[in-house]
Length: 148
Image (cartoon, rainbow, N blue to C red; front, side):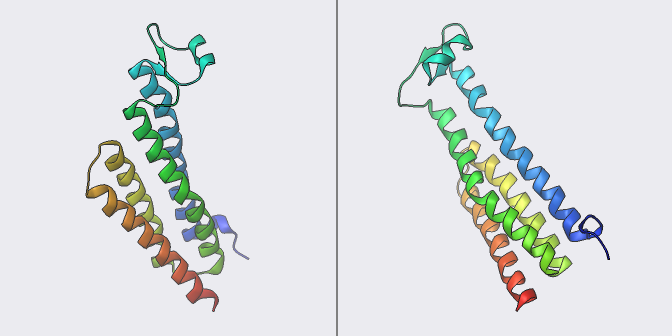
């Protein structure tokens, strides 16, 4: 009996999941980096590790830092759907070609969406978001086709 590790769709899912997880970690690390650049911090205890001349700001995040956080939250909202659908897709035995199109399409769309979000590039941000949503929808439809 073949294992998941030998399934090409699973291998692709694992690669895409790793790339997307790294993107999430990069965006998470960009928040404190932007705060350091702006020399602003949100929590009083952060004064112990902030740069000289940094200012405590309460309730209002620096605009550049807030943009990174929004991009991070947006990715955080779609990743659980991808992870869940992706593993179900592989287990269901749905089309390997569909896996390539949807897994790679979603991953590329989300990386480009993050870049567009960080650089305030409209309409590209919306286009890349929509492409990612279409990929997730395609995964769901193919799963249904495989199990019904």
